[in-house]
Image 1 (cartoon, rainbow, N blue to C red):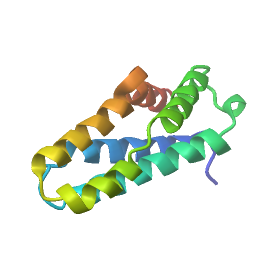
Image 2 (image 1 turned 30 degrees about the vertical axis):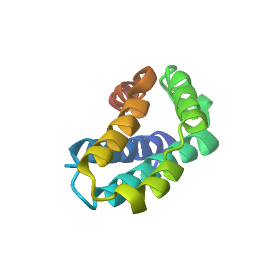
Image 3 (image 1 turned 180 degrees about the vertical axis):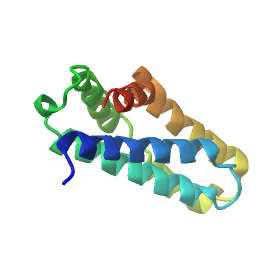
Image 4 (image 1 turned 90 degrees about the vertical axis):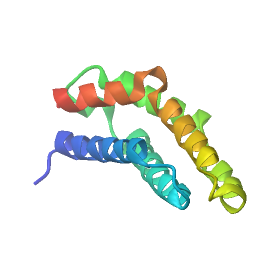
Length: 124
């Protein structure tokens, strides 16, 4: 049986995997779909954490600030519509693809969110 902490750790690892995949994308034509796929995964996992994870059940006391960072990200960044708009017009333009990917990475790195995620995983 999976413990609550292991469950959270697994979700956080999946967020980091998608984040790492975003970093490795080469900004070639067609990569906009890969960016969208990874972004949707990240957003889905963050929503699960924000809506389903009980802070009191997690041993490290600094999980609450991380959950707050996730909430901030979900409330303030919405790239899906921009990707939908960008797709038909610029899906073969590597510079536009790169710019979109870098903006998403910048948003994920704001407030040290990904760094804090790595630290929590190590503590769990």
